[in-house]
Image 1 (spheres, rainbow, N blue to C red):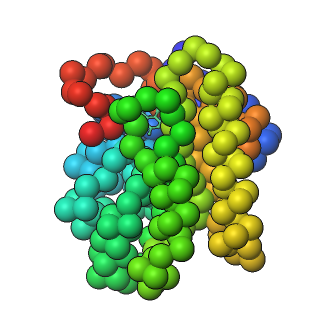
Image 2: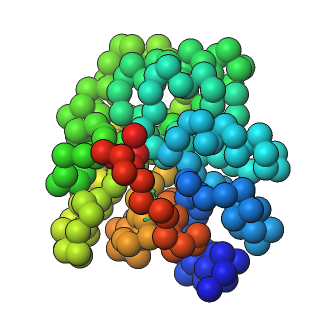
Length: 231
Ligand SMILES: *Cc1c(COP(=O)(O)O)cnc(C)c1O
């Protein structure tokens, strides 16, 4: 099936339950993104800063660009002027840098806290306690140009559906707890970014609001021989 057909099929599935789609276009050529754009897709996710910047320059300006991969503090400045949502905030230090660069661009940047839910050592993210600690800190209270709009998590890469379900359930439970404790009357805290090609159906059942889908739209990626794809 073509990119257009894939997108149509996935959108039909998820929009009936009002879940939003991030089309994960990492490693894919501009023409593939253009096809998705022509088919109506406006949210694209990339995991590398340089690739995100290049694609942003080349493609229409009404695209919402999401950074979904690990972000180094020294690279925040390149995306701060335009990025719509950063899914991968995993430290206070990073959040402080995003705040600083957002100020320079006169913006408030929306962010998700990436929570560690997988049973794997390669995944980035905050532990549950670390997330709470961050939200309770004085340093966090002082930030003016970032807005935490929810949480993000990556489940274990496994065939075990029950395990995946439990990991997403834990993320949803943490989200509900954080919402009540720290964002009670703030409608903006509402996103749970969970679910990829292999597990987005389970994620939606568990309360995802934002699925990040790559290969089911654009086809398999050429495997890169890096230690970690998200690096
Ligand atoms: C690559 C990636 C995805 C998409 O993965 P697919 O299996 O191709 O759907 C989603 N989230 C993150 C963080 C990714 O790095």
